[in-house]
Length: 49
Length: 462
Image 1 (tube, rainbow over the protein chains, first blue to last red):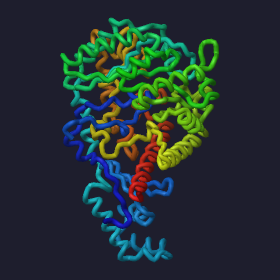
Image 2 (image 1 turned 90 degrees about the vertical axis):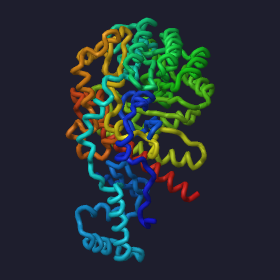
Image 3 (image 1 turned 180 degrees about the vertical axis):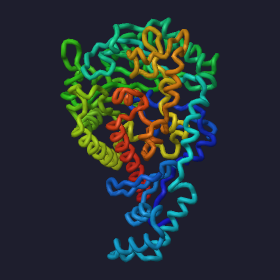
Image 4 (image 1 turned 60 degrees about the vertical axis):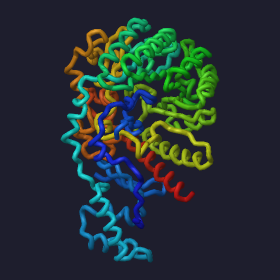
């Protein structure tokens, strides 16, 4: 247990390189903004992650 | 690469390449800032001096904290080296020529006359036109034919105002549904509308068939009616708000966005977000205007500073609403730290010009809706496919590592190098950088991650 550091649970991007890239997730701009690129709020749809 | 920032009482450390997020106290915050450039003993000495009035800061305890930092580094959660640059260019090539999403411009016309419209009142600087069923059907067939092994296909009904061609929208949805089973595809439809023509038929059909609806509302009546006017110059607020409320209620309050644009007239846009919340809407999106710098609606450098403050105000207020049990969602603050996109997506971006294209009423293909009307950016058409392959390759080469300006940016795996259309409009090149947009983007991500830290802290307290 670290006294001064709390690490939030996150998806490890380096690990995701191994099984990522199925391409099933939504195109980023499609759902709401239509005028900027942000991918961080997209959901992963990989059934095999 | 590590990014450290302090916001709303939280000390936050982001490890760009692993995606790790650490919430730390001020001592660890300082230690991490010195860690890569100082020896352990130098760090201990500096911390003992800085925190000399604190009993809990001892040499032994500082060494333990330095050990924790080293352990995180060893575990690939801090100071993770960037190993993605070499593979970045190959990610989009892996998907070949797959197309999985289309923005169908079913109506290049509009019943509103908003001066700030990037689509030039729906005409995209061209003629008014409605897409025929035949063209739309061919677009859907084109999508199926080029979707490869992808199951999920997305189609947005866009304009102009798509409800001005509503019968064709319905026919296209019905046609697409008949094609799902034979081709093993699943269509997800979205509709972006100004609301003027919403009626019970639209509500019933949209709520049954559209996985998302995007409803254009700029917030406060005086703000909305300033620019979102009909051709007689009358504001549209009073006509559309009751329709939106009816649609959203019938939809069960889910899978929609109230989507507003803020301009020089309202850099204090959080008041418009809160107004939408007061109207009973909870799924909210508010975007900075996209227009030429000399347009009166354009945000000024002074506005940008206000907007950045507003993002903080919004994040803090959303946390308050959450605590009070009446949360709202803001599109740009939706981060799923555990179930979000993989590195492929984070590097590749939105897919404009490759996996995602826009189709005009005449069946021409463009890299995305924001390029429609720019003749140099025509990719081909739905009968002959992409014929301007050099242009497609240019878009394929766009990724989080394509721009030298992004090399040292901690946010590049959140924005994927940014919006090609924004870059083009700001610099004349899709490989340019829209710096003002970057500044706002970074602020939004900082706020979104701070909210995650706050939510985690609240959960622990509970």
